[in-house]
Image (tube, rainbow, N blue to C red; front, side):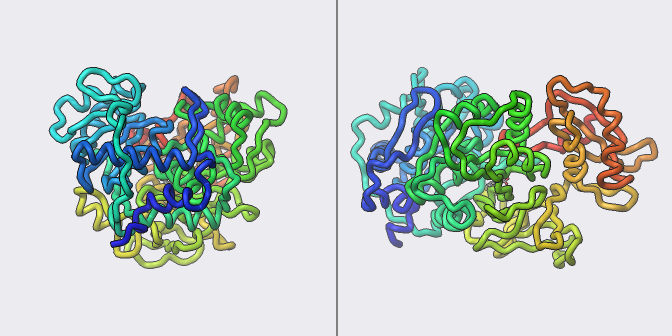
Length: 512
Ligand code: 3SK
């Protein structure tokens, strides 16, 4: 084993030897607006590792984190790695029941919580048998310890030796059913995503300032806001609040990020707000990324017209840690997910795992240096997802003429109408081309004969007349084909989504 296999050496400690001790690593855009240089980060993480040590936390014990995007997030994450413990960042928007399930599934012995989230978390730990300390960032309620008291006076410790293939951290990934699954990642994967997407697609450099609306607990946010900027000594703007269009306009103006990482729902909302307000937004952005779900072509084009900066749309997964299929700066075709990121290979296969010919829809498989080690306590699911070097994504794609990949839907979202496959995403793209439609979700619904037909749920832009729904059927027929038009169109206030903006179509199926 070699100490340099521990990712904390590369991402944190290395910057001191390379003279970046005074360079700003993190800056909060809300709350107390604190900041942390690379030198302070190295010190604070070594002290947090020392505090874990002092508390008797041993290697491989899990440190669950229900922490907003604030200075303590990187300190706890990298400090745990330094101690050889396993940080497990959790989505900060989950319910008490799910926290209870995950905390018991992971058998975390330490839990770190932001004080704002305490009310939801408190009932989740009352019967927990594994937690030995609950640290609250802020005022500590009875029965907990404040994060400040836990770290107070702790001696900084040396980063422990770790093999690059050793488990480093877990992320919990939600599926359509059951408890989220613990996805176990190794140390080497963090550098692998920074060296591939971060360096070769995003082209991140030391002078950059990144703002990611995807929070750090999400694999997409973890790369955008931690491993990519920290691989080159850049700066990250942390924002713990809800990323509304107004918050985004404000951060762009005052914090001046040069890289903006968004998700399609947010891009759609910002474009609509910007078009309604008129004028040109004030910003210093040089490049934007999108992931989480496919970016509708229309939204990408409107954003680029208004903001004068391209969106690199790509697809990744928690299992692969970050984006493996992507457009490139200067070579973007909106409405596609581009091509494989350097270092990754992709295949499209049919139900017998045979490669499908060009132009046909198949399941996307990916192979690359950042695939997870497996799911915690889910042997069967691990075996079916991680098939040797290839990882199944559960996404259906088609390869177009230029070799670009076009998203068709989740394996379980696709359906057939009159024997022909319909991609909900394609129908949704056609719907959002109507100027009154903000968002759309399409699912299969059985007609009176029991045959599947598309049903659409749409969110209208502010002030739009619900009567436009009648025009939409013809729009879809004209744009993408007679059999694909939605036989039912319902106007709704909002679509069910995951915390990271993915539409949960399974919640709409059978909802009528
Ligand atoms: O959903 C995605 O596209 C994604 C991208 C990067 C990292 C993680 C995920 C789930």
